[in-house]
Length: 68
Image 1: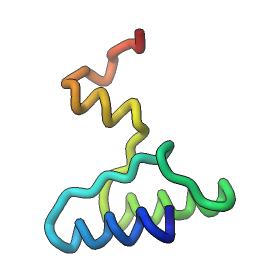
Image 2: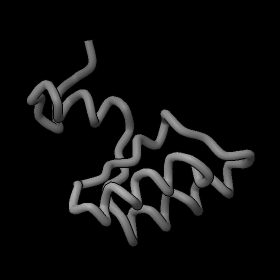
Image 3: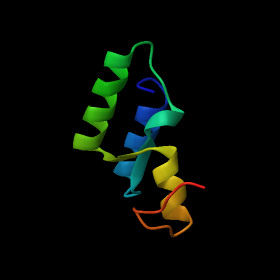
Image 4: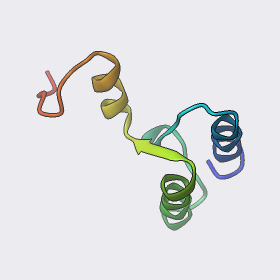
């Protein structure tokens, strides 16, 4: 995540795109590094969401939707 995804999303933000990091679709060598990368991303570059949250938003489902 912190080697490929993070720089790509950061560049997108610098070009005035809204960036979303999909937390369960990227990884780092350790859980601690993953959490630190997500924390830095959310503080500096964009939003962090899970793949389910992204799909809910794309499909117009509410936050209270129950998975089928």
